[in-house]
Image (cartoon, rainbow, N blue to C red; front, side):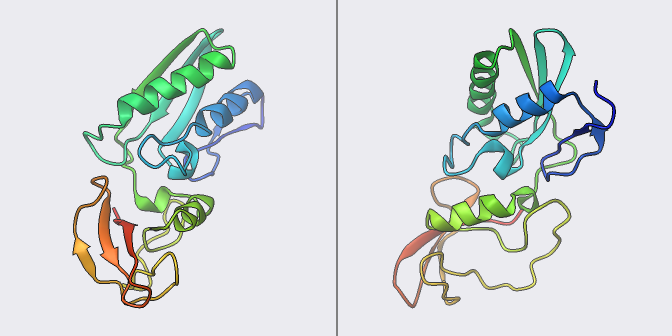
Length: 179
């Protein structure tokens, strides 16, 4: 390991030492699109926790699902394996880690912008770990920014979403629930 290099985390902080190759492979794995929300990468969603190289040709990846039992974890692990093997890693082991649990606060600011651009209202509150409680209860329409957005259904395309309709522009939209 290279002294002084830092291990990236889902929120972009860097608590541990990593090699340049680990940093490179973290970027490769982090660029994999989320299978349920392909507008976001796994790094932007905040589910990629670490990439380590314990031995030559072997990568160990830590992945935290958005919720326990998330059906997309197997696809994420397979896609990470494909990406890392294409980057020259012979053996890829993906481990699901549940502590600390994923939170919508782990979604990066870039990820929140991409959700809004795709017509999905991002979860309230700012991006990054420790972002805390939302300052407002309002859910803004991702199209016109109106705040009169009544709930249509607590469930939408994925378990993480709810369906709302904007009273101003009359468009329905998904809102990613806060966790």
